[in-house]
Length: 87
Image 1 (cartoon, rainbow, N blue to C red):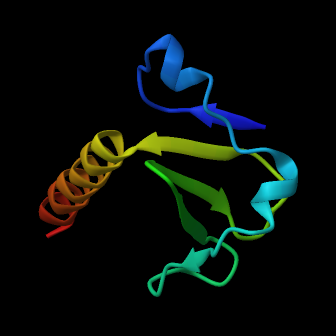
Image 2 (image 1 turned 135 degrees about the vertical axis):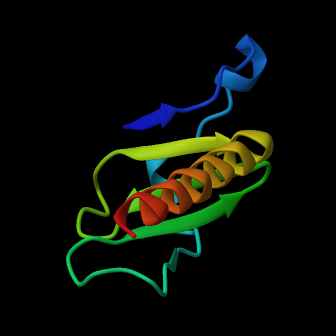
């Protein structure tokens, strides 16, 4: 199953990654992950796909490039705030 994370137009929603094409993707694993808690990222055209490395057949999150940028900014912002709270 592929979940669209962004608010997309109808035309963008119609762009999908078929199951047989998923095997063609090059998945990159984060270098900063715990043994059982890691994500993998792949790029397909204008889409950024994320999956749980321990469940490669599970749900995929699909971001537009702009949505991915906002997601990363949000994670960094919250991580910085959490670090400040823990100090």
